[in-house]
Length: 408
Ligand SMILES: [Zn+2]
Image (tube, rainbow, N blue to C red; front, side):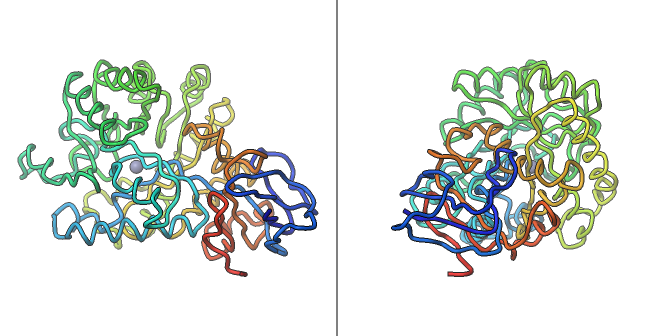
């Protein structure tokens, strides 16, 4: 068996760190946390903290090229695929062993990683985002005809969004996403930050349209997560039966109580707000949306606090788009400033696992779980801001296989 030992183990359940023990692995499974035994093959991470493989519940692996040139079709399919594979592999090296892709890929990338031809995290995929005409993720110039949007579709690789404008069209789009490998659905039901033709205060889709997606998801024993910044949008989503909210920027006490009572989860995305506000000029985004980033991170931080206090299960996602996706741990660092280090770590491990439906397999270092294990060369409880530096990840094990060992 393999025994990974370091200064301490944070197992993701929220209990205090364990010292003087190792995470013991047999094949692709965790056997338990305990003393090193005589025949164990020891991976010595002296001075490091051992954590469960991290989970990013909001990624866009299909949006890993510069957005402007990509949407203008200036990039070849080969270049886009190369950028996707590179970010996929780098995400794993940062310590993220599971991700939930919230729009843009289909079965092609999932299968390529599963087959081992490229390295990457375990990927859960929703296929194309369900978007309304002119809504968030229908990211075009008003000079373009609506039917041209579909021409950007690259089946087997990437499809940002599918435009649908009635319950029947939503139903058809949802069914096609499932046909192409989706295991849940994502629907944009308010305006967004990088939209050109809407406002963050807008609601998008009607309740019956959202409900059409929810019914399709329920028929597949899965769920709909909704992109939503404003509270009226979130209320529409909840009324229709959606059980997960992405961003949730404006959530207040009253709405947080409603979400908690109904078991609706939240996946906030601080890192993207932080990075875009700081590095806007490098993002090849339209200049008109620069203003939209201001103040969003602070509002989202408040929403996280309110939702956490109300008892909502609050996960963690980066929402990075574009080529620079090399510090996903920043989400944990920013979150720690709001709720403390241990809760921030849990959000990116056990809580995310629960929200995305894989808690039985990953998210904690417990016997029987898949052997996804990470080591960082700092004390995350004392210095959580160091999660923002992916160079501090020194060991990554996925399914019992060592994919990074900077000390080996
Ligand atoms: Zn997103």
